[in-house]
Length: 499
Ligand code: NAD
Image 1 (cartoon, rainbow, N blue to C red):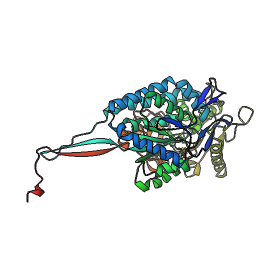
Image 2: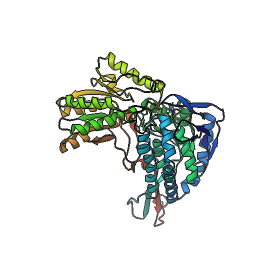
Image 3: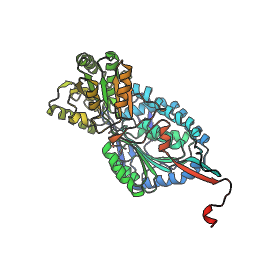
Image 4: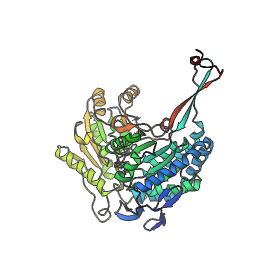
């Protein structure tokens, strides 16, 4: 455990792998530096899991599976509720650590990420003993019942943008339904996940049920996705990596669940409440510096209100309080890494070369407070629907603006990307709200709001945004398989033997 200065309280940072209920060093001894995106200082050097460590973790998860599967659903639920309590009791620590590691402003980690993580474990704690089967009517003399069985050992691979929250989304339904897990956090942001390991022990979740192996994607992640001892891989991350996961899964035909990228259309109709739409649209793209798969990254404005909307929206974008994410007043922090900021800057260059007008932003933020960090101005550009910046995920505080004339045109534009994760519309017309919500090809639609998420509502996409669902009752199906059991109630001898 390292101790971290530089935060209002002294934070102890766990830097080892978590396998079989114990914190252990990596077999090959590699280390991964974890940086603070505010100034790129080193927060910790954590153990790097490679193949031998993933093997150990899968063995621990396999060993734990039979007993965890047999544990009563009520007991599994009770342990998840205890974990939710432990997260809430540790919230002050967790939100600081998450903010230091990701750059996500502390007001958001305190009000959203950490409470939502606890809420998700609580939701699945309550759900565990409500997962039941069914008894389909079949031929006379037979009883058929269908149970939901855990898939087995699940490999879970999560990205760096909401590290702890995604642990809740992945672990909650997996554990509630009796699976055991090997989870690989992103190499950039493993710290709160390792802290969660301590809370998992504290809650009394049995040894080996959850194993955590921070490591690089192309090494530990790839090996986990290929591993013959893993029955399912649940992945959140980029579409390109999602494709590699599908290929890696082919060896043992493991089940795959993918939550991938997005290119959310955010439609502002001419009858929208402009003030609400401006606020909601700013949240849609600038929350977490735009590093959200469900970001509203394509603003589609009806031509009759586009000037009024843009006037207010640009004022708001320019007035965002950008700064050290540990400051409770900060509204936008740094991006999570310099490498990622380069990717976003590259898209700004692509927009310029294509002839987009940069309406605001577009530059790195300099000056003594910012120059060592990963800061970038909130950026708004004009663009055409076929432009690369309207088709590819930028994953930053970068939004394209396109105007439209009517409903049919805007629905076509909204649906004209390979993604289908989330989208939104702002209108006072009830019929149109339902019509357009139905016409948008995506897993989630928000009307007069944006980026609403709740443990009780399914989260996931279609097309290149992936398949399967996190959250909601829907996720239960993704972590179980149906088993059909036939009983010969009348003890009839099957006719085949009668001759
Ligand atoms: P990424 O795909 O590079 O990495 C995600 C995770 O996969 C990391 O843990 C990484 O180490 C691992 N990984 C990388 N290569 C791998 C490989 N070959 N095999 C196995 N694992 C590998 O994505 P990122 O840059 O960390 O995250 C940003 C992306 O995640 C964006 O595209 C975003 O849209 C997407 N995302 C999707 C959702 C969703 O729910 N749909 C949510 C958040 C983020």
